Image (cartoon, rainbow, N blue to C red):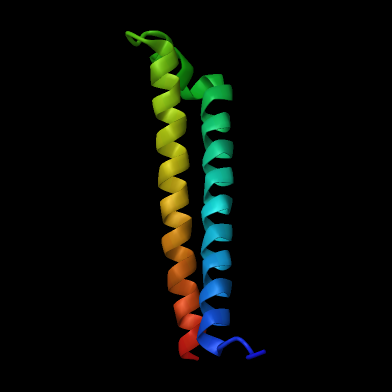
Length: 87
């Protein structure tokens, strides 16, 4: 039986690392949207309540936060892992 090539091991570990950063970003996005909607002084809930469809507005807020944080964490993780490979 032949051993795995180093490039295959590197690719699979890089994929797991990127998936971890994406999941971490999604968790931070959910936490941020939770904080936004539970601090009354920010006025986000009042703004959502006055919208045409409050449920859809809430889902858009949460979806936007999760997507933005996920993409940001993924890109940051890729950049930092590439910097570690250079050194």
